[in-house]
Image 1: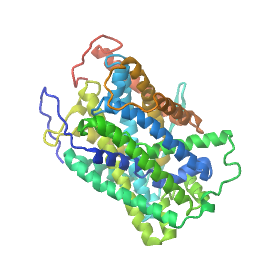
Image 2: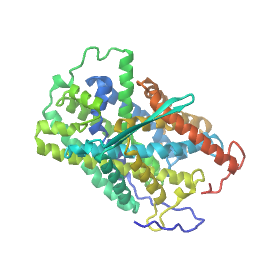
Image 3: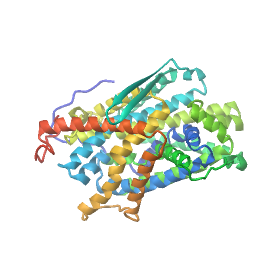
Length: 494
């Protein structure tokens, strides 16, 4: 792979509108499904201590629909690469507070996007451990602790094992496959989607044809007692569900490459949410009917042997079927990593093109017409994050996004309605403003209701403070808000 030199040009680089409704929906679905539901069932059951953990999936689906309506309205009104970057800037004022908030979004994405990609790669490597158990042999582990004023002690645990090297290789392969024109990627997306649907279909069939209702609904005593522990567990379960169902907004990051975005972005969002939410509920109930929840909870607590659908297939059909489903889940995990990397690589590009992020990210490949610097940087950081544990990856990325993206965007769609009521909106949120308020309240519940929630909040706090400092220095040097009134920043400058 060669890195081209960027030709100097005053013309804005043009991306290719090569993604139709089918490809956009497929991208969203493979992003949403990924490895999450196949590997996080033990984590979600462990969080709530029984099959009542299905409440986490149900409330997570409601949250996805409400937040999806927020994304659908904003994505149809402001189609273009960048997604939340574009929305937050416009909502809060392009040359005022919106410039700061949109910068902070890109800054947090520099951490949360690689965390998300790495979680898919790590999940793939853990399923590979079904074939090669020694992949989970720990070579080295280390925890670093740093005491922070006002925030407390920040802890970071790194783990090195053979599975880590496999996860890094997955990130590298993804970058290689995406280093090409978008039209070729659209065709590859549909092939990956077919593999994902085949995997879920087989799991559901196997579970329902061997379903044990008594086992699936074997509730422990006090399963629905509304105690502090119940709400702690529900918060943890909803966090994992938010991770598993998340990705429905991926198409919004590719707005410049979607055909008829005013129609296809909302349709792709809502179709993918409804389809995946239904598949998740049916699939997880079917798994609980074959694999006892106490066994799942034990795996979740130990963060090992998370390849639950391989266990299901082994008990139903034998080792050969378990091996085959493991391969299919690894295919699904790779499809998710592929989709995530594609979507997120366009966001720093959009911000840099706008002059609100580091100018190197605005470079577009002169032949294949895609933001290659952004792509390579994203895959490189994701490879480093593969040294983190899966549970830590999930919790950290969700909390960082809640604090610096989801909350300000959910409230922001209401702010934009007030500030710009005449703005063209090809799609309007149903039952406005109820979905936006429900989404914001749900994100707050996930943020503060979990046990030891301050651990991840500290990560978000560090990212926020560092982002504010970097923005402040750049704004002071460039005369941006709040230090000056310069209405237009030269695109691509630092």
